[in-house]
Length: 362
Ligand code: URA
Ligand code: ZN
Image (cartoon, rainbow, N blue to C red):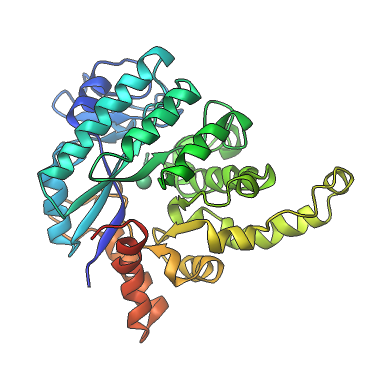
């Protein structure tokens, strides 16, 4: 029974060089008051000059780019296979004219990294979403021919207007045609004003614990409301962090649709696929939710055959030096163990068998 980690990130060395060459978010910098340690500044607002440079962003070291560190982490946590993906914000920030070539270079790099550990590493590719829809669709087709690629990772901004933008239709069509699963992952969070004037006192907790999952939830709700899965019934999407809050809120979203006079007048409450149907036929969920309660909601919404173990490595490392087993990983393992109890078959499915089947890893 293999253990497969489908939510695990890497910045290949070429991408690290790009981040080191930049001075606006996203970038990597050694600040004068701590010159020997590099910090990774990626999230909107992380660059606020009122934050001391030693707590801006997060420390970054070889665990973000050195593939031997990924494999050592896998070995230390009993993980047989990892499906690696470029971490946020992917290529979203690149000028349009640079995006397509950068995507090809990053995807070739990541595919080659997988080739250094055959059978242990597969990957989700990245898309040139600041480029044109044609360029994105062409990269989807190219990724389908790279041996270790099993889909794409992307954020919620689409071509700049979100995932309910009809301009994405040729891209959704290409993803469906080439059977490339989308790993949908948050990055932008919510507007900082919602966190209030004391937000800086709370570290990264509010944007990561709440901004990320709500961003995902809103993005998917917009896809559902705009009929993406009515038009592309074979489009498969893996949602990060067990779907944000989608499994928990799906009933409320459906109820709001059923009671919306505007939608009714426009004839949009009938002949549409419900979120429940989409959750069971098009959506997969990772098991990166850190508690049995959240996992049970994901399980009830999508089923144990659509949930897949993940770690979010190298994010959420232990804060104390010398801890070899990561608390973030142990918490997700133990949520799975508690949720399934004696039902070993379902636990094994979530830990690896589902990923092998869904992502064709054998
Ligand atoms: N923080 C990020 O910016 N990305 C992740 O994937 C996890 C935490
Ligand atoms: Zn992640």
